[in-house]
Image 1: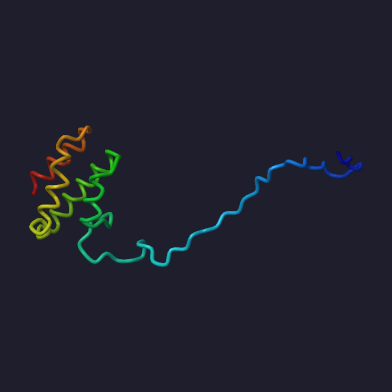
Image 2: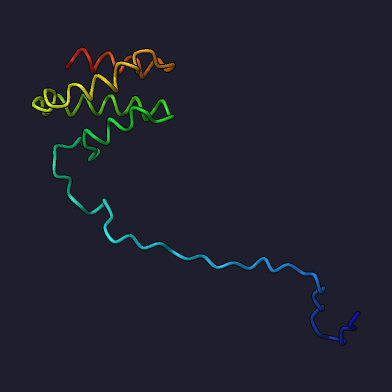
Length: 114
């Protein structure tokens, strides 16, 4: 064992583990924050495709907001209903048996308005 000199820092043990780390950042070339959506969107800037994906989200709040956003989109743009009717039914019908009451109410309101 080496002896340290008086007034110097304590010597590190021979089996010391270095816990230092460096963080690097990831640069995205095109981020969706600044790009304008091409089709109709909700007030939250979500398209119908994004809302349909959110119907399968694990969080009940996200599923409820997706139903409300779809209702908003279909009331503002009723022409969207006919070309996307099969996709809407495929995503919304299983939600009628959802475990969360607020999600079921939002889906019933969506289907009643459609």
